[in-house]
Image (cartoon, rainbow, N blue to C red; front, side, top):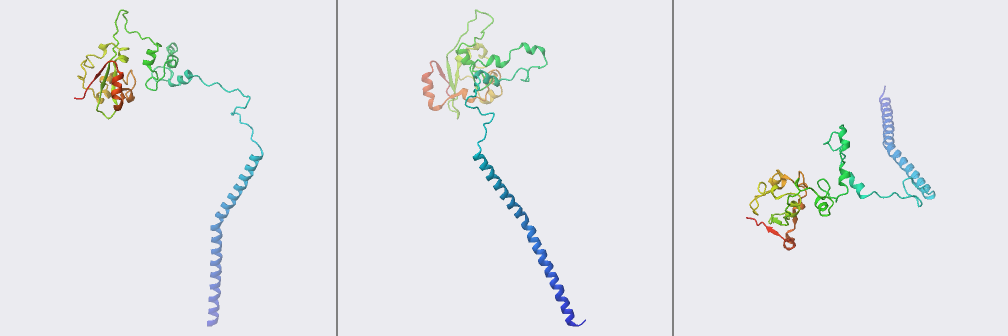
Length: 250
């Protein structure tokens, strides 16, 4: 084979490789662009469908829904406050304290039945017991002996004057309407003002105020119930209080 033939063979093989490479490159370009074409086609179809549905909804009024009240339909009466408040208390079978399998549970009064008519509160057992007492809705028995004298003391104690929180106002009246003086003095609190070193840590541990609050009285999370007097309103609170004692910090 002479040199001319060899050169001709090389040129033929080169053209074949270039044609194959060109075909492969074109095929790869089409393959890469195919998802884009599909996405554009899908988007176009969605736009056409949406426009068609929009035109239909504009031209054809939608029928009234079953839940929407018509002009002549009767409107349901709103639930009573007592009914809505009854949801605040769990039933005796679901409170985790009573045995729901006991036949005696049917003899007990449900909390909602007993407490819903009383003044509402958002803390504790959801009842404002002082308001219920002031309104005459309840009349707690003071003692098993009818001749027992109950001393209701109207005296406010102001303390914690320099704390970051508002000043504490302790009202004796609300407490002595329920409790006798001997319930607190002298075992829990000394009668002398300022003689008992009350701290919030001790209260959270169940001492002093914490013996009742958080157990049978409103919880200790209700800070504003005790820290109820803003520093700027202290003089006004003193003027409004008939009988008061101010415990000055030592």
